[in-house]
Length: 318
Image (cartoon, rainbow, N blue to C red; front, side):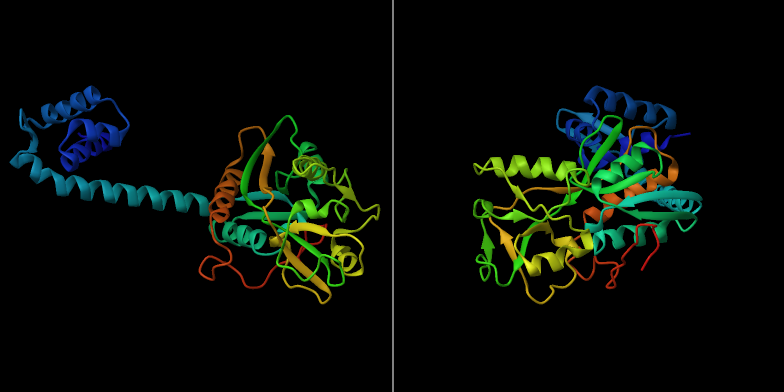
């Protein structure tokens, strides 16, 4: 009985009618493809291809096999896809995920809604923290994965970029730099940045230090201890500016202006897990994160929810 792999080899050669191109398409060596096709012919007891100085062409027996082989492989692929989807839906258990507050809108809700629809048997609890505490929670095994913004890199953890953060500058409408479309990072030289503490966001502090060093200065940080949810009010009151992800912004409050960065500063959201073989539910969650990270969430067809979800620190929706 022919194997699926042998049928794929036959079809590739039948479609390319060239051993070199077919072998390249299959990512195997040309002699290996030739031997595999010859084994198929020996098993069937017929010649499927004519090989001569003019090239390769199908025999009558080969032409008779093409459509049936293609149908058989299509049916097999569909069956395997259905089996994988059924297996994902049969996943059960619990998954604990830490989430950066910047993911409250668009990306975060899209990830969790896609995962819930594909794995309804997995109970997901969410904990909202900044990246520093999330890494500590992950190392202490109190969560299984973290959706972090510019996290610090630690041994024993794996980091996978999800998508770019698209940083923007928020400042008071009364600020001297207001009423312009874009701003250079160099123009923030004397501005106190409203950022989390070094303990709460060590990776972000380090990365900003590297980025601003390229413009010849060290960033200034506001001495004020500001809760994440209070930062919009702090921006409106001034002084200081907020460098944040566009994902964080649902609506612009009165008295605050948004400026684009020119040139943009590259920072990313990352999926962080312990560096070990993941449980099936976590492996599926990572697949969902990768898939959603590729979507254009500004597009209505890609956006899974128009109503953003906000989470408390205990993981409950509000």
